Figure 1 (tube, one colour):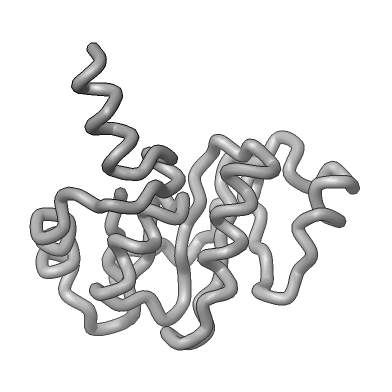
Figure 2 (cartoon, rainbow, N blue to C red):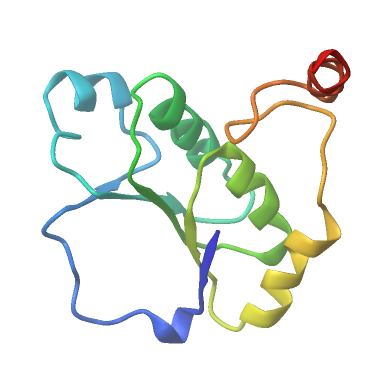
Length: 135
């Protein structure tokens, strides 16, 4: 996952192939209207760290709508959210103001494996182990 410090975000918006989606947007409508066509990056908002609707949006974009571009988390993005964001389908995140990017990178070293499946690896641990044993 690409971690971007708040101070490193350029003020000139690269919006040509970027779609910003609000938390209350209906992804089904956007997909049906072709809003995702040609989009290379989708930016999902975390207006405050307790609002998790963007996790569901990222998961839907990856699984249901087969979006393969960059899904970026923006807003109140804190260190303890990053691993779950990555597992939900985010590929980049702009950290909240004052959050240390080096400390954020260390989160991925702390949590290397998971029992549950996710967007990156849909099979749970027991299924992955069974596949290794039968190989």
